[in-house]
Image (cartoon, rainbow, N blue to C red; front, top):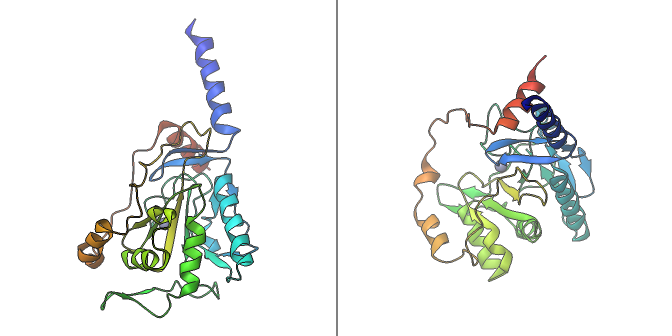
Length: 253
Ligand SMILES: [Zn+2]
């Protein structure tokens, strides 16, 4: 009696996690099915370090980036340089950041220009001020990126959040800009779980308000994390069962 039920469950599982694009699990412990590759260049954007093959994402993320590129172009801004999205099937990177696992995260460099040159830090960490590379172009790029309703949050260096608060006052999307160390050469966009992605684990919503007051002040005043540059162990999270199966399958020769 149990056997047909088992097979039916297995078939439904395969259909469910195979045919349809889906972000599975959390941003830092997940994977993705039926991802799409962001074209290496298009209107208003260009992929950097394409050899890493981290330009895969859920259709919503690809659509978001292509739409943002078009809006940058329409605004007369230079093409954005898009760095890591996710691996084709998601999961943890061999090195680098912990998230970017479910096809809903993307790093965008703050500088524009030659994609072959390295990332440009916008912060003078010694004086703890933004440097001359951070201009109105960077502010407008981040503002356009943050205005999209699909965005859950964008991680930026605390000094960049401060600059955005100063430039945009009480714009409602400012709350999506979350201060986080290490985001002084790029910002990190994270989309909400798309509708219908039943296995996608959402992150808690950002706090109400712009986050420009006491929360930002505490980040600006406490530079402990900014100065810490210790070793980081490879991130080996406990993945959802569906991801363990998917990633093991794909890695087999
Ligand atoms: Zn990132």
